[in-house]
Image (cartoon, rainbow, N blue to C red):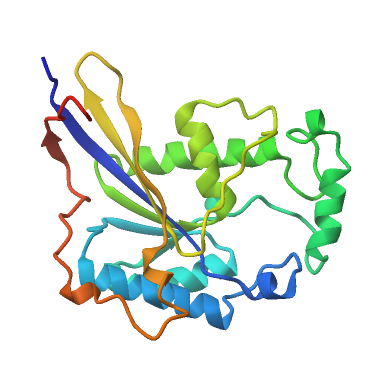
Length: 245
């Protein structure tokens, strides 16, 4: 007998657009590059045309690249921005201005079995410290806005860390053979489900949707306004899954 599933809280994670620091190959807290601005504008136009996210709250990392992205897309969601430093990227401390390759070399010098617990430089976060902050922030935000549709403009490592949190992966060791490639301004959608006989659980709807920037290097534009409206995924609903689901 198939059970009815009630979808409760929706969590949309948006990675920021390309930052100026990324074009300079340095560690830095900068605003968006010209390309990053275009990426964020394409996402804004998509959200404004499709109404695919009916958000109740818009939260942004306080880092400049995330703030800039949130400021561009906010009109499409018609919401004020709540800035939250706890959804910032894995913090690199006093490495501002350091070449990326130099910082990465310091990281590679740490033995693999110690990488989760050791800091690259004394003022930075270890992976374990970052993930504790991430998991704590997710718990706080999703409980404060339980039953709502939450949008967080954040960072690649933060988005990737949600997989470890929701899947219950050990964060005291570092991945040896798998990596994520979370694209700039991509959308990732999680939601909670209540299934009879089970505790509430998180379910991944999709990861890394960057369809809106696929046409940047082409002559055309995706005609979002002409596409069939997407069913509002941001409201609680009851579903009866098929056997294949």
